[in-house]
Length: 422
Image 1 (cartoon, rainbow, N blue to C red):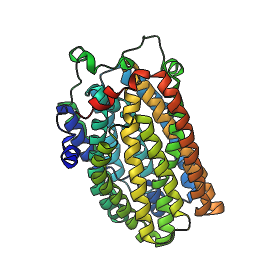
Image 2 (cartoon, rainbow, N blue to C red):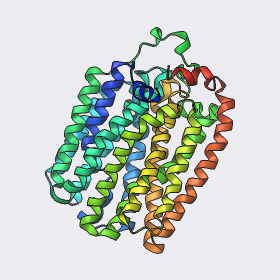
Image 3 (cartoon, one colour):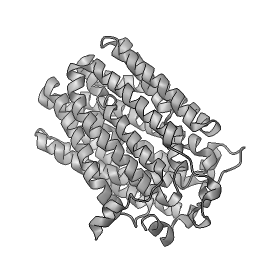
Image 4 (cartoon, rainbow, N blue to C red):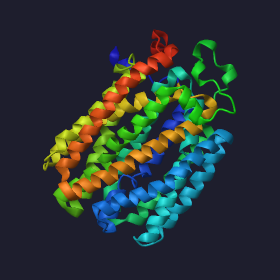
């Protein structure tokens, strides 16, 4: 009986939900450049570990103001038009990167492509929320996350080969899949008319706030959102290391040829675990509230870095990515619904941009700090540092759980928990 429920939990969602699933799948079949960027900079362009960290810091300084602007734009203008404009510009830069030899100009084109792809993020996040009911959010985020990883499992395995032998083709594929997913969203995803939502399906915390209220004012009045955004800085620091320290460590152990190849296999295994485990974990944790899921997820994908202290055998990396992925899944099906239910619809773009900024800062600090630690003290010290930050993130999230229940009491009801999986 449980087996039927696990696979039937995605039935009955809106047409938009399934289109978003396919769009994520298509996008991530080609989105293997960013996870491999550390290796491109190291193996293809010859940057040192600390130079790569400083380069990411510079990139972040460009991305941060753009993310703030994107959040404000998402709350003011038609979200589909925003996605089209930014994605078309992004695709043009992807294709431009494919036309030049590996070097500074190629890197500039690629960063520009990533910049505009990032700027459509707040609008894309808002569309997911606007096309779904509050009670469906766990299933929606679970389903789109599945699409993300079904595409990524193909892209990651292909990425290691393409980056080593056909880097230009990798940029072309990334641009083409971005364009295809954009067309799907524009043509088939439709927002739900709030007037047609039944009273029992409404969530008062998503009602529009006053026009004069800024995103900062909203977070000041809803302190758990602000604290969770701060926590995201730490969790992003930790999470991003799988795409930074892991490929560097594997290249150090297995060499510049086998390192990228093996990392591609490990990344592909990550996608495989997601496909198998996401429906199961979504069902098993259906009665858990969002923050307990975030706590479990953060604990899993933080502490598992302890396994890599002194690791030299390939199987250890697969064990690590298995545990890490379980944490990633649980965190994903908790984090997205958490913010979606607590942010007023009028401020989704702005507050999600702050959320993205916090994650950006965390990833850049992580790359900078871990890059310096690797060069000066080695991989063991770097891994121990990651584990330490993970424990801090778990403690802070536990504290926020207490505050959140006092601030949003109507979200802590049996009815809300059960209605998502009838």
